[in-house]
Length: 219
Image 1 (cartoon, rainbow, N blue to C red):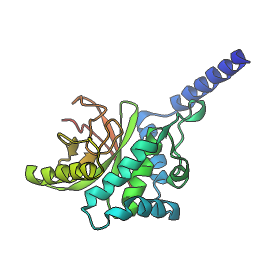
Image 2: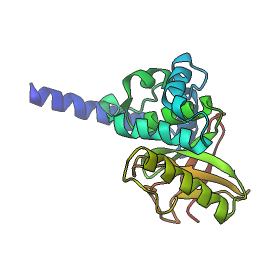
Image 3: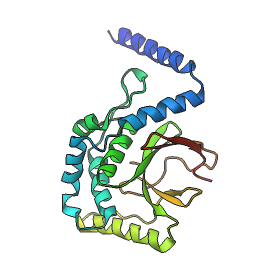
């Protein structure tokens, strides 16, 4: 039985490679962007309900603390599970909001869906075989303005009685001055470490409206 399962798995892996071999890199990027954008569902009633449930106690707080509440919940409860059969599959956020199960892109689409349902904006970045969400903080932000975000994040965890603290924030700044905060699960707080720091790493940046671009965000 085990040998049969192993053979089937190898066949599926081979078929997956054969399928992707039919596409150019630009076509794969386009398909990835379309699949991820279609999985973002901020208007889904279940998404809106979950966002309200998670942030109810922070309605009078700074917006970043609402984001902390969403991040903290997903970070603590997400169950990582690879896509079955080695095939790439983008679960709708309206489904994963019930299961809290999936791979990195499913985590990212659910995170961005919840953030957008609260009135915020975000994007998903793919690099080095990994996908993660980023939160839009604003444009042309000064160091003092970024420090305010960090202090608010630390205040959230302090008020919860947690020892979690952000010593510094990891974010990307686009050429137009837009600042995007890392929301990956590599650390226990928003603004934690990136999965990739190499200046030569090419990033596929996917926006919630379905547009996308290739960029070297670490340069």
